[in-house]
Amino acid sequence: MQQFLLEAKYQQTTEYPEQEVLDELFEVYGEFFNRQNLGLAAALRRIYAKTKQKFIFLIDEWDCVMREKKEAEEEQKHCLDFLRSLLKDQAYVALAYMTGILPVKKYGEHSALNMFTEYSMTVEMICIILV
Image (cartoon, rainbow, N blue to C red; front, side, top):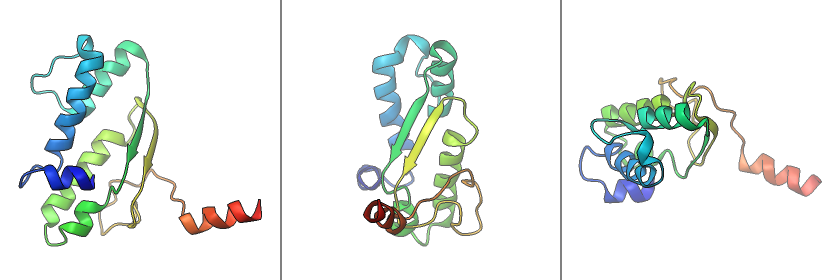
């Protein structure tokens, strides 16, 4: 996400990465959807409906918008809404692995991403040492 944020122009925080992923999906699954006015979640739903293939999402630094644009509350809300619509209660999601320093489901007053189980790296390191 940090790289997308750096490459995105003003007010394209979600549009830019969404288009990049859509372009990649179209290369592989282009026969299942057209690119006209179709968002990422809708494209993934169509692919899943045709193939029953689920997707694994790896999102590094999911919280970079919250950290880098602290004053832009509307943009932060937009990003959370985008992630919610992409991941929450979607049949095409096999797994979502997101990294970041801010807790996902506890960020601000927004509860759009309350479907995650959070694991602290400190806890994981202790478990590894104890095993």
